Amino acid sequence: MQRLSSLLLAMLIGTSIRTVEAKAGAQTRGTSPYEKSSRLVTLGTIAGPPPTAHRAQSSNLLTVNGTHYVIDAGDGVVRRLVKAGINIRDVGIIFITHHHDDHTAGLGTLMSVAWDLNRTQPINVYGPPGTEALVKAAVQYFALSSEIRIADGGRSVPIARLFYGHDVGTGVVYQDANIKVTAVENTHFDFHKGGRAAGKFKSYSYRFDTPGRVIVITGDTGPSDAVTELAKGADLLVAEVNSVEDRKQAMINDGRWQSMSERERAGIMQQATQGHLTPEALGQMASRANVKTVVLTHLTYRPPPNTDNYAPWVEQVKKHFSGQVVVANDLMEF
Image (tube, rainbow, N blue to C red; front, side, top):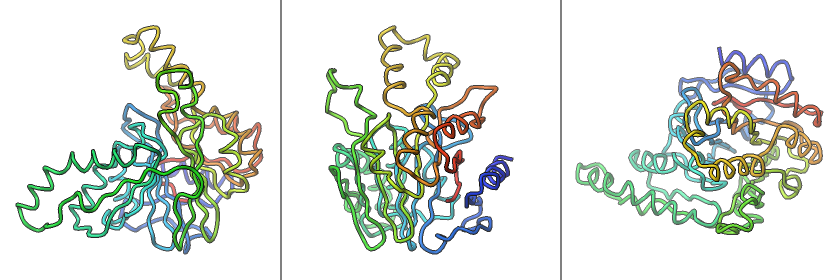
């Protein structure tokens, strides 16, 4: 039913979208002009940190001329890659937008599975300062399993020899024959200013220039002139969207709100209001950037009875943006 709803929505708005089938390599027929050069799969589309039963957490797969690039690796990323028909051993380049666990919790598993599948070429992980330390910690976590499996036979290369984290700044952070990747610092952590964490943590948005089109992935951000400039003229803007009211209600429903102090409640509300995008703010940003299509992802969980009803958010975006607006589901293909 979820797949059918996604396809019906795509038909209604007239954009070229496909849903990846559960069987490896199988997919519905589409008419995307980028089929032979690039495709984007929204692997995980729910915001965290609490997990949900029906969506994985933040992750996207960009494939250009057969080369795979993973952007963020939230919980569930490996299972979603398998459902998308991707051999985990073939994933060698990963970009992290920031170090919240709903964007990184699946990274260690992704690396370990690639090693278990006898990958011999390095996996390189690029992201804000702290990425190198994150990768080293993940390698250390799986080192004992690696040592045991080497003793079991079938492997001889220690896991630490395959994985490398790279702390990058802004500007062009990566380039190969398929893509150019440009990063800007967004406003996700701007509310830290004046506190003990001021300036310590960085959150990036990325622009991917491919031979056929431009894709911008915001990661988590509040309203940002830098991200608006980064997205200028993009074919696809894959953007987070947030509801403060739904987030608060979910915390009340699961008991987190009641367990917080007043100071903690104020802090989480500050983060929700200043560090994320409302549908209206996203629509304004997309309009100023003159993008073609907006894809809503990193969706705030909506408590019952509105679970997975994001149609009102589409309408709020479209009050300010006249282009196509799509609500992402896991394993949608663009």
